Image 1 (tube, rainbow, N blue to C red):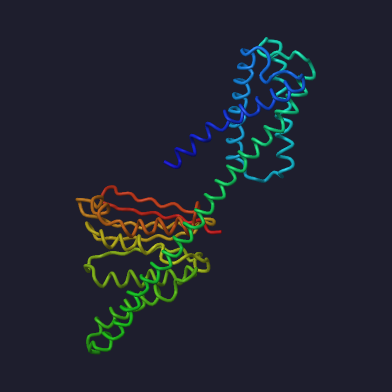
Image 2: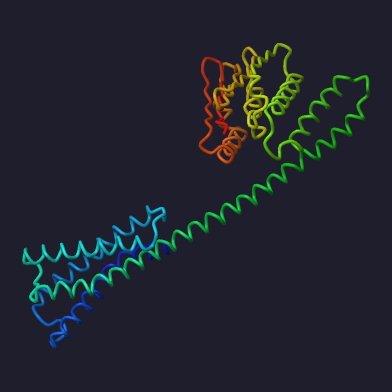
Length: 342
């Protein structure tokens, strides 16, 4: 309702300002001649009033559009000089055309030209200032709201991060307790607990900032090794990792959701392949896994939280520097993530 009200007022202002301008002109003109207010032929006055209001609407439209698109780089002095020149040229062209077509009656010749310029130009400059202040105020308000929204999102993200840390930390401590409760003879169970503890330790303590690819690759190998403990013996995992990646920096845990999905929706021939390549400044990660005959499209729709979270993280960490595509074809599900490193 408020937005509709503001829009309505924006459309009414030019008409009101045009009426003010014309009445000021009439007062100056009629008083100069010691005549009555609105002295002269009424029809000509109404035409001139209508033309004045139209001029206000045209300038209002042009100025509002220009101010919305402006980046604010030009100085105020140059901006107003440009507006002044625009007004002087436009108004005088309108008066010359109006006089020659008979729409306007410039009975006193150059005196009428001077009076209209002296009256209309300052008033239109004031009108421009009002429009400018209105647009500037809206822009400041919008930017303030965006900043406040970003602050709220940041606080919420920090809160979510602290919440997410609580559970891994609790599990990490619990696993340490369980590890010492498992008999030493049960080496397989102890190995599983150790691997899971390593994964949780990385998530808890090593992911607060960028890490090297060598750290991330070690984590991925540990994650794959842990998942292999749970899967069938006929599982085949192929790794093709470019050694040139080792010393580059990256935000952690961006590839893990893709590998997690591969294990989650694994089927068919039980084969997973991970390729990490450096091409120029772009890292290309391709994860493929075989799937069952029924495919995974429906299940992905039901449980796509990991990929959705990954997409959001990529938008925040690598804006305009990433691409993520998924494809299911001929019994193979493929996810490809490309990151452009600075």
